[in-house]
Amino acid sequence: MAGLDKRVGSYEEALAGLTDDMTVVAGGFGICGIPENLIAQIRRMGVKGLTVVSNNCGIDGFGLGVLLEDRQIRKMIASYVGENALFEQQLLSGELEVELTPQGTLAEKLRAGGAGIPAFFTATGYGTPVADGKEVREFEGRHYVMERAITGDFAIVKGWKADHYGNVIYRHTAQNFNPVVATAGRITVVEVEEIVEPGELDPTQIHTPGIYVDRIIQGTFEKRIEKRTVRS
Image 1: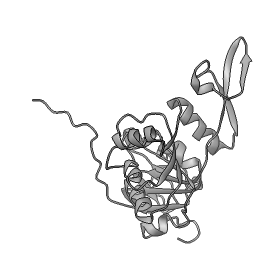
Image 2: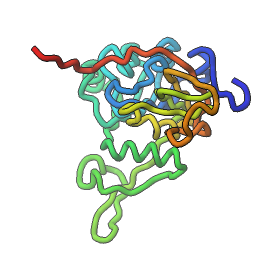
Image 3: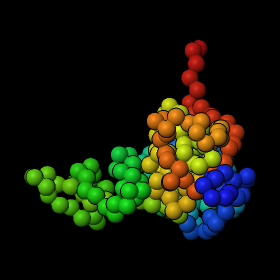
Image 4: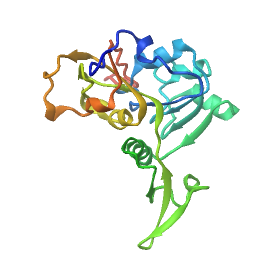
């Protein structure tokens, strides 16, 4: 990697510097548009005590779910966790700390973190356990809960195409959490299906400008379907 060229040649190089007890923010929704090879590299590295922020924690045996198998995640901040039996087991046994956050609030916490906004107020969660211990203010007769922004030591992201400079395009529903996650990392690593020469991407189609991206790597992907449904 030299100058504006963000390409790296290996997954070891892509996640160099990731150590125990760091915070990792991860793109994806369910198992759609997840940075599956970067997750696999985190598993191989064996780092422990991670705080992981993502919409969900994958499924048993795939996605972020594999990091639960070796007890690499200490705390999970997510909005949905219902597809992972091992997650439930570790939560109920007290091995895993979990902070459930409304989905829109989680997206805004990441967006705010990427924009340098330390906190914001939202009506979502007022009067529920979500608001416990948080500052509440009234604006124009309605109560709002203060939510703190989220940033990570590393952001791991799955894109479709990128150029050498780290400009990224996402495909279809893989846009999900990936664009906001890409802005919220101190070091942002993006894995893509194809890397093209500078100038080949239509500037009007770029979702994440290269200014947010530190490292980019081309990978191959399984693209597993979470629940395959076919006619009987």
